[in-house]
Image (cartoon, rainbow, N blue to C red; front, side, top):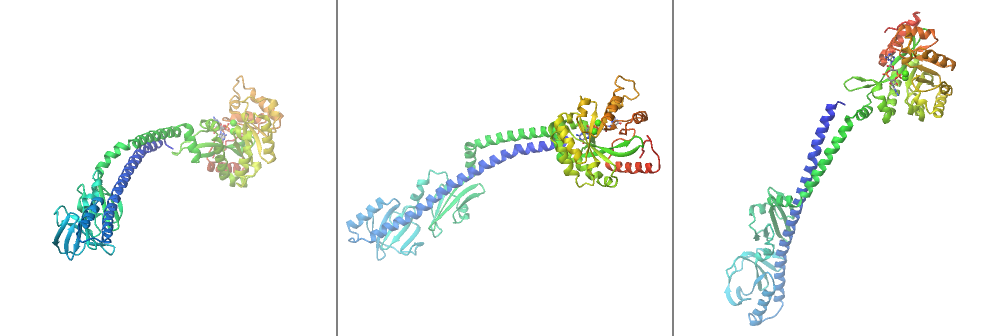
Length: 529
Ligand code: C2E
Ligand code: CA
Ligand code: CA
């Protein structure tokens, strides 16, 4: 993945990470405030509707009790009882007694005015008649509600119903069962109240928060403005904003940390493993006496998204250190199966040499992975060579066990980069190896008359003494090839013959090499393709 893309992604993530918690907490705090205000208004509306309904019901009950008793019509006892009831009942202002269309007396004293009874505005139950917005006959005071049961009626002051709610920061409207507004408090907007209908509900409309409560036909509406809410919100919920800011800082910190990790070499390597960016090139292994290609060493390459190839010595050490070498080795083996399965099933004498890290040999995992991944590939076990460095075989007992098991299964095992480590003849003797690869640094000394020039001869002698096949690495000149052949080395690989190449090129190289063998062109010749 490109660095610029990682940085762009991180910037976008950090930006979103910064905004999101702030937005969420502000939104959360606002919603909570809104809900709290709706609940408060619903509480007010419920109280108002309940009080309206109760005051009418109470007045009716009082009148019914009165009607059940016998008095001398408008006598002192009669009027006295009416007065007592008015004083005791909270919302009843006056009680009147009617006989034959004449208001004969009230709780205040004798009367005698006749009046015409209008049809009631609404009925409560069967026998309770009710009127709202009536100007009292006697006092001519503010409009009142009237409840009538039998010969008695009571004046109920609607203002008294809600005056206890005057302290609340809300506009209140109470509507009677016939739809007439019975009482208001704090100047509600009648158009808005009407819009809300008469179902119990709560919510927000424009700049208003409202709650409607209906009870036995009575409806109370309580309304407040969102302006007040903002003050409440900033006062009570600054904690949410503090939390949001903290969460923002944490998220930005995490994004920065994650991006740093992704931008680190190890992070990049891990992404490459996940995206399976590893491919394999093949370097032909040549039989020196004939110049014929007898196999190949599989060499891993990291192919970056732009197509550039990264050499293994730049990432294998890090992969080994971090454990990522395991999935990389798996990808290499999978590629070998795909690339060479067909070719190798046609040419059973060819082999492929695979590099394993120290850990794979120590744990024996090498056997398991090769078995699982190349079992059905068309490549036979005896066409597979396992390469281990001296370092990989350091733990001699485990190494011996793994090598023995590998050979039982038909694989050949070669020791790689021989001579660059600390291994002794004795050490080499104790391992049941098949082949030894002479490191390029020794091949480089051929015909150079350097202090170490003689070492390669010793290595060759030692390998012969142990009956190991010898492969010389890094052969770059004809002289080196001739020298090695003259000293009994059977195989080699190196730029003199071919550099490592992609699978298609290698397959073509093999076909050409075999054709040359058929036509008799052999011996140290460069197999040009
Ligand atoms: P190696 O196993 O010693 O592989 C031989 C290296 O020598 C290869 O380098 C090859 O390209 C290079 N080479 C071959 N002939 C010549 C030549 O004539 N002249 C010169 N100058 N170089 C030559 P490469 O491909 O860069 O690999 C480097 C090392 O990375 C390998 O050394 C091996 O230790 C490791 N490696 C490669 N593939 C794998 C793998 O799949 N798994 C593991 N664990 N290690 C790998
Ligand atoms: Ca090797
Ligand atoms: Ca080597």
